Image (cartoon, rainbow, N blue to C red; front, side, top):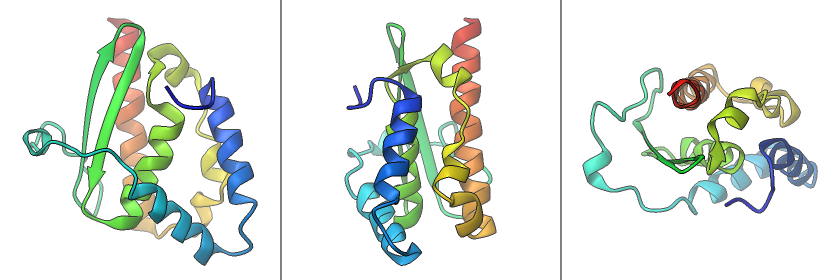
Length: 142
């Protein structure tokens, strides 16, 4: 489980971490460094079923339910996108479906991602976020 107890706490912790950096070059580097720490993603999960459409780079996301928790794993072939995946995993991974569904993604504004990402990266981030919410919604209804 994440160090933060809730998705809201994870968003707050990320905002505090980003405030330590004076400029966006340092923030981008921090995001890239986060992406380098993603767990290995099995090649057998790199299928059309797991591919996220709407991303310029290749992105695959796998999920499974473990009791009440939803466990996500994802990878990209682009360094910055892998970092964005790491941000999403920190907030949404290993949390109950209802909590994911009910957590507003205000980190986009809080971290400034909505203003500082290129349109294609922003579209990809929103596509990944949409998949996480779709999974949470389906698992809540199940």
